[in-house]
Length: 223
Image (cartoon, rainbow, N blue to C red):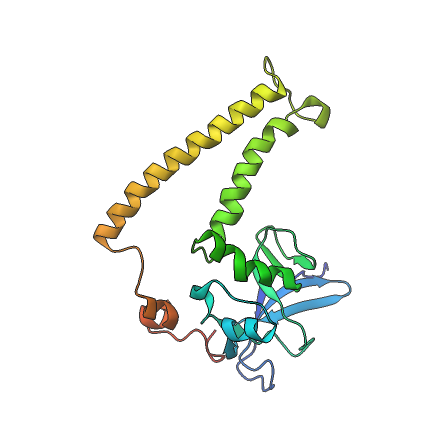
């Protein structure tokens, strides 16, 4: 019988488990192989927010909208290290790729990016959709002109040169940005008039689980 690989899956503690660390815990398995397993607890916030953490490690948090986000207790192993579970993307000093969509980073550089990059560019994107899919998509679309070369295993350019194909790709990217920007603006305006685009700041800080659904999903006794 083949062994089961639990990477990118959750383990839920049995209700009868009495353990100071894992009682009522929800554990996300980040790595599971013949050498063992690595998982982090994802439902146990501690008495510290992101502002307090960054102050403790001497990083200035310019993104004020992130200041009150809770920090979580990840587990009883390597208590002197911090781990950031995030959408895959970027180049960091110490990152474990869990899946094509999710990564776990333990190096300080990812915290520097959280503290400064978003605030510098002034956009509110908790899931890094723009950073990953927007910027990544633009780079990939333009880069297609290069990797399409027959010398690199591509199908070639037909009657075009690499420079001509590059111009075509740039035009296509610009057209997509304009079209999606105008269409999104119209849809956002319609949605804003009908239901509103964003809840109040105090609701964001409290959490939509409490404000909208009356469910406290941040305590260790809720799965």
